[in-house]
Amino acid sequence: MLPDPSLLLLDAPRVRDLLADAGWSAAALEELLGPGYREHLDRGERAPLVRRSAGDSDLARLVRALVVGEPTGGVLPDSWVGPDGRSLVRLQAVPHGGHEVVVPHDPGHAKATVAEEQVLGAGAASMTLAAATPRALVGRTLDLGAGSGVQALLADDHSSSVVATDSNPRAVALTRLGAALNGMEVDARTGDLLQPVAGELFDLVVSNPPFVIGSVAKAGRRYTYRDAGLEGDDVSRRLVQELPALLAPGGHAVLLVNWLHLEGEDGDARIRSWFDGTGCDGWVVQRELAAPEDYVTAWLRDTDETAFDGLYDSWLTALSGAEAVAFGIVALHRRTDGLEPHVTLDVVDQPVAEAWGDEVLAHFARRTVLGPDLLEQRLRLRDDVALSEVSRRSAEGWSVDARWLQQEEGLRWNGVLDPYGSSLLAACDGTLPIGVLVELLARSTGLDPADAVAQITPVISRLVTQGFLVPA
Image (tube, rainbow, N blue to C red; front, side, top):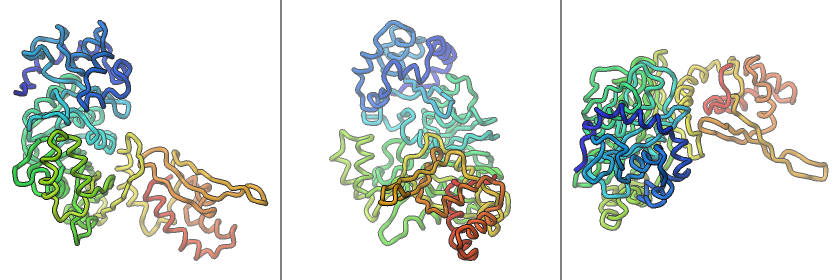
């Protein structure tokens, strides 16, 4: 039987003080347990962590009780201790963008046998969403499908108020507990999808929903945190289509989704169609595209490794007709400038920065730059962009063989550049309109001005779209 997290609320302030007095932090835990300690926890390998946390310091005792899962030894209030002498919950230190929160979750890990309502800690999907979330100051933020509450807790730092919802009452209770442990106020509500917040408006909506496709087959959902109990990619489709009703003018939504590429169907067109009638601009950032066999294998290894053979065939059968499954981030923006909604799909398979949420805001703001007056814009090269060159030795000496641009932050786009582009970007300091710079380049190189405009304008457009060039 899983414990009721609400029973731990009364003594949460006391535990919060214990953590502060002991010097609890992500850096302190990593120093004590080693930089890869979360991987040990995810695999259920406790022995290395028991050994590393041996000691009599207050921090070591709390870590053994709240991270490793050893008997508490009297370090915690009685309300936090189960009949087996161990803590009823585990705590995770989650740093992000200079902000750090304490996230409570149920004991156990994804690869162990878990109960249907079990609430796991912040994993790879949680941090993917956190990385893509804009951190500009906003009024109301909604964390839809809160799980452990990590997104709601991180949002407190840049939101006037935070609402968190989940269909799992345990998740709601743990989110409330997390708010108490961090000294925050989060309005946590129980209910499915948009039902708990119907009729309300938010400036920012984030969602890590149960987006996994196909595992339910005909037997109903297995894990609340993973399986929505809907057919195919319906939960992702419904959220993309329904979340705009919650967005205040100028508001943004960011969510994780899976979508199917079905035989005889354009998968990109499929997800683009989800935005029809929403009245919002959309940005689809595709991070992975997996064959059904690889998709099933990855999820079984993540959660059901002990039952791999028994579940593989039935799950793959549930994906019959699918050529591939895509995973990515969807962002929406409720425009206020009257422009027609526009949807962009980018395949982003390169490594990205740990936090790139500012790119979401910048992406939608670029619509005002990428108009018919593009050449009249005064643009500058973004500060984090570097130009790299490779030279080869010849009989005449060293000569540049290749040039490419690389962003150090955000989505870390990179691209090959020719000598003309290199010269043009060197002059992009925001002083002169782009059209004037193109004309000057044409004169200095002997190019026909009209040809130069025709050739360079699409390049400028791409550089703006990917964020290499920004308004001065």
